[in-house]
Image (cartoon, rainbow, N blue to C red; front, side, top):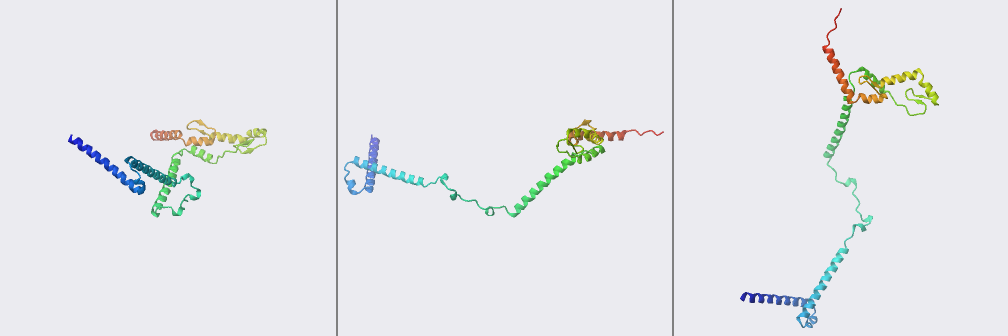
Length: 232
């Protein structure tokens, strides 16, 4: 019973303190005549609530004003944009690092060139004079332009189909055609190609080089173990 009485007294005292604080705030924000005219406690509390609402309204208005000061990026003009810095004002690497980067780039280019050169050298056919002669012949081989009534082998230019047919029966043309057939065939692989350029690609291919190495190895073995010929 004693605890209940004490808690009631404490709650009543806190209520009185709140009322007194509200009255003090109302007295502070109101003129003496306005506050003295409020006789009842309910009227005083109502006046205090009205004053608090007015204060909240003023706070929201000030926040709206601050919001309107923020400028949207889309409303900026081109004149308002900040121009980029010129190249001489941008940060640059120290001279020592710039020199090091140039050396690395130069070394990388040289390595790629040397790799390409090594690939070309390893793909060259080796050791057979027939292939060397064919490659020498094909180095001077040029494909003629596609012209009407022209012979791509002899660089003959006719004025009609009859001129071209007559030219193809001449000994000069037949000799060139025979030479092209010989220069377009691989005796080792027993293959006939349509042009020396196609044969050149074949001679640099993996299959031909593998067969050529096997042929040379077998030839060396035969020479090594071949019995000497008997002399009469």
